Image (tube, rainbow, N blue to C red; front, side, top):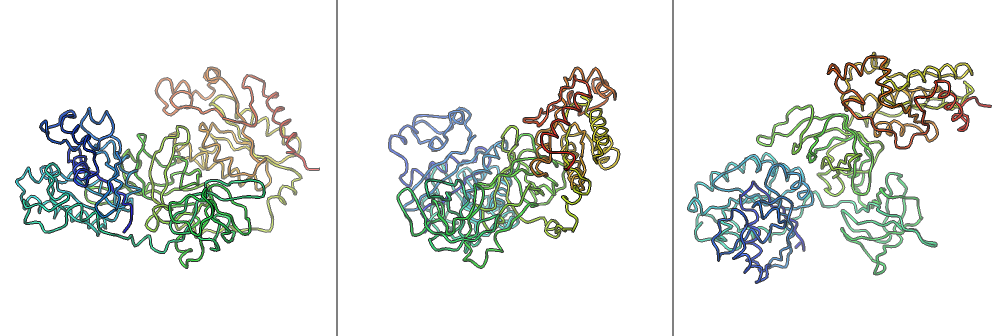
Length: 620
């Protein structure tokens, strides 16, 4: 029998979750006598429990704010030892809809869910939301507790009606291992022992269901792996440290290091207490490999003894995933995030919102953007390929979070489902004429010069003069101007943050193609967001992309207003105007800063001097 069972409890507000857990803890001998005595006198706001009787809900709500409001806000964790010796780690999740994000996080590590329903109120939208999230998070065992059965005089009909309705939703969600139990948590009926007041019920009590052994089919025969968290170095020593997942690792085992694909053998498994003959899931260890191949944080060491390796791990950069929105700002197409999966972090962009789950009937709804607590299916593009396992095969290897790069706030909790197949069917085609040959033919060492700044800062004027200066030196160059591109390639884009991100992405890809042709590429683009500019920079090799900030004060740009945009924005005729209604994020570490108050000639000469210092220009 598994020694620890992680259990999630959830339901709508006042359905009795905390009382149920408190009752289970008391009746299994997990609450000290003095704590029980205190629960007979202390009362939370709105409590209806008479003085002298135990208020079981107080034994679980951990935050003072919760007790003052009489609700559970944060996830409260409690450990309970059962008579069999099994230990439960119970997460009592919030009932209010605005705290669904807390429940989703707790569900990601739980193996069994207890869904509490107030018999008086029946199944509510929040009940269905919790069931849907539990199913998406891979929970396959569910105990449905029809609570407060004493309020309806232990009516079999009331229980049967709810049982039949909830069974339909359990079947729709694909949850096959479930039980529905009539319970009075306040009086202890069917929590630990069978109740004579529900003689019509012949099923298990909650405790009996929790004591059952269960092995998730999807967790069988997984490849043992170790996500590398730290590379430890000492004199004549180099080890790969991390926590074992999805199986046991042993010395002598053949392994593969992803994403490099290098093969090796585990030489030793080391811990603070010495060497180990094997390391089980959840154990923090340091591996030494033979040969000592190169690896770094974010790489994954995977055993290759199993025949199912290729069926489990995939190197992916375009994925489809289910996502629970847990950020207040929601999610939109084009948004850029940090994609964090285990020890691996890469930049990512939402390329498509495929659908939103209707929690009441299971239908998929078409939407343009998602709000907090929505459950959606999205396509995500990663900046590079990383190793993942579909969530249905491994919860540990298939989950991720999306983090807003500027505020560092977590926006979504995701589950990798499938690879976006069209990306797998595209293969890069090499040609005989390389980028270097094209540059050599033009007798130049080219670069991308990305001019960013406010509208009216002078980007286009400087770009035009710089293009003329390079032309006069018989260097081949081309200007990609933001306005010109919006008249053609990007005419379908507006000026929302999402469209601005896509605008920069497209311009970056075009600049890459032109640079590959051996050209100096001068980009004149507001490109107001730091994360967008950094993604464009990552398309190029080091030393080929230079960010140039045309630093002109806003009041000067507004005074120039050569296009009349600021005037229109101030009168309300233009929305999403950078510097007025949208922010401009100053470059964090630009290669060149041009003072917008200087003459154009001074600015151009500064760029030319910089290029010469970097060996960019005419080849000797």
